[in-house]
Length: 375
Image 1 (cartoon, rainbow, N blue to C red):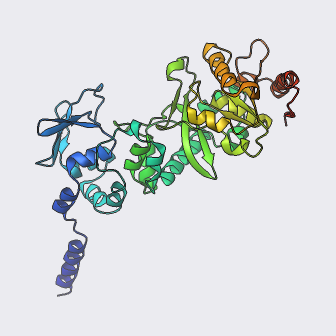
Image 2: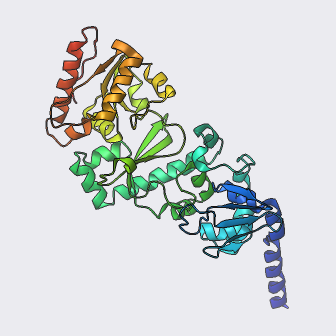
């Protein structure tokens, strides 16, 4: 009799936790679900087609979703199933875990997405902020990357070769994305992978956008708002930097905006890290494309000491800043052999060389009261 009671209790417990899979599928139409993972779908007759996230498809629309049956199939790699199968395969979960994820917290997270199919790259930062879990996912990603950097000898050696010691990169929250770790880390933190896709931390194929890159954060009022990554030892300028999708902010805003008398404007994150190391107030434009919003932000300072890269693109950006701000923008020239501020970082006298270059620019601008000495 005791065993019968135990069996009945076990059956009752299983029934109480049983998931209504039919209801889960009904609540998550397959086309909408795939779109919520940042995969763009286009109508093709009564179906929808797009890139398959389960294999490298070279941009070809091999994935087909059928809204009437609630099924998907890739005619290239053979992945197929319904909404639960899609989540199970994409996030490496058991069938029950995938159904539970859809039926519980993931349902609440998905509802913040507009009910249309939007590619990740076209979402604005304002849209991403509407996701209440986004700050936690961003913070978790940076936490993972910071911990990885401090335990990755190759990444630390690269930064040391560029003049940045461990204490410098640790103080300024620099990280390294080894790749292939973020999905598991978010699962361990009980954070939704779907939000990482919306933010652009993961691409449509589930690959980490920052993989193989040194990662530099933009933190404002204690909250991470953006990331940009630089490939290790990259010689290809076209692919050297990748930032998260959306508008590109000025890096270093919080540190520099405390004093609006003057600021040094540099091009890259490593340049800004060098300024931080020497105690020089600066901001980085993360490239030479200066948007109207970026120019508006720079306009808050009375003086802009412009130290862009000594190449054609950098000179063009410098000219644009001078054109936009007139005498308020003062170009800085480095000695021969130094292309940018980061080139000075390995030099024992790098901070002093930069200070002298700034003072020369100050001397050309007698109205400036901006005086800098390296720490």
